Picture 1 (spheres, rainbow, N blue to C red):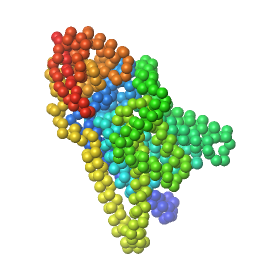
Picture 2: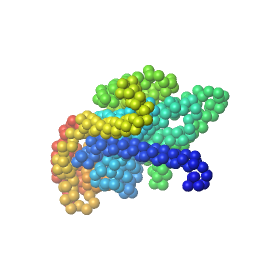
Picture 3: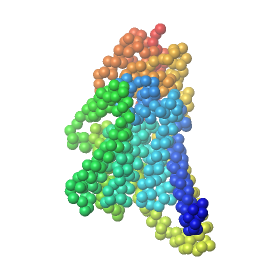
Length: 544
């Protein structure tokens, strides 16, 4: 066709070559996406209790998010009608998961797998900045397994886990700019994407925004150090870039502003999500004590997660000492430092808080990849292969041989990732439990066989223990679970529900609620070991 139009063979073969190259490039991209998705599926299948290999994800935090998420699609408004302290985007993801499976975590598993695939692709892109693709494709699954099998991952479904794609892609964009584009001006597209990523973090768990604060500070430093520009031009560029970044954050936040405005709940959103988290939830300590506690917490988390801790620390040191631009090194110090600072300055030591720090485990992978690349480039086999490849007769066999080696290495890497996940994940032991072994399903059978249509429930003395999920119950009390945050409203509202018999069932953990005997009778009691603690769960039913 091109030959007929242009009347020459050269144009025909040129376009044919471009078409073939485009097809090969698309096929390679599709293969990479599939490889990342396969890695994510295998790692998540083992590491998260939301997986089909587990009877139930009995983490109270994940169940709480699931309850609030599904309630959105039942007409309730978070913060106003249901009290919880995470961001609206997290609840929306869990709400979508509930549409896929209303009484199980199958939908959550799908979302976790998609998020992990996005993380894997970003890790591959980061490695490809420093080492050849065939090494990147081997390192990526192993890095994913190391990150998701840490104690920081906990039981699966945390806010930190859902933010990992945002951190990893933010890290990729920042490293790519300072390695390949600086001192040229950063593109508006990259800035806008960075702002959108930051906006998503803002609306999932805002105390993790330290990463993107440093991300944008480094862009402003790059603008201020731009060559051949007047100071006024540099300042103007800073303002423009800052506005584009904020526009991205606004794009990610606008849907929630509209949602709460339409539901008359803007004040509830700000009061619960921002004010209470900042001024009530964190510890009140002198700054020096906060810094000391923060360093101690980070040290303890590194000991609890030795693989990622080692990769992040040693990788960070090697990144700083290796041959690279000073601004690249400063960029990494700023990103890691502010990520840790904002997360832990409040003094909270929960294990899953440190998961964002293991984003920087890729630095260890970069160091390993560069060593492997050096060994390959200087190996006798490589030199022999290069020599053989110059011979026309041997070009095809060598090419095929290397292609087979790459595929084999990739498959082996996924297998190794699965082995790492199974042997190091804190969750793999829980596979032995069946549905009939878990107390929550015993209580579920009791509630479902009670004959009460559309039963109501309240949790006392604990977070959402899972009955809202397994029974498909939507809460009728704003404080549907006992909170760790110290506000008097929780006890007062819950006591009112008990005193006046406003709920069909009461689930209590480790204590007997006041006035429970007035309207309720104990119908079930079971003991359960959870997170190293022995718990007693009591189920009460409203006396008819």
